[in-house]
Length: 180
Image (cartoon, rainbow, N blue to C red; front, side, top):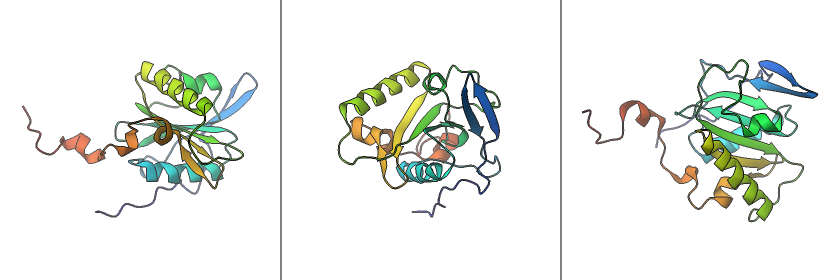
């Protein structure tokens, strides 16, 4: 098994773009394009959630990823309608295409055990909303800075994290695939 470096946010964690929607302030963080950040499994998603908890995020970060699960941008505390309709929103400064999302929600305390019915309904509704926009919602991760909880693993009978994913396969095709 090849060694994979730990997923880390750059030292400079300041948002690239600060925005104002009505009376709501939010921002967009753009990773360094020369140092791609790839979330290829739940371990990297959990590392990202821990790093986001250390940022100046008040409630939520919506992570936008391309088909290789490279982070293209992170929306920090976006308005609810942007988080829900992210695939249809005209996001300033987000020119890189994305097709997958990951929501990291900061909570005062994250309970352990199975998800509540409220969490389950909310996760499934958000997943359906993203699917209707042509996006794959990888997960909604809850964290209080110490505990990290995946609603995909808790609510979905077949979460994406259990599928084999290798970004390099997207470039070269799956083993055994022949070019026509």
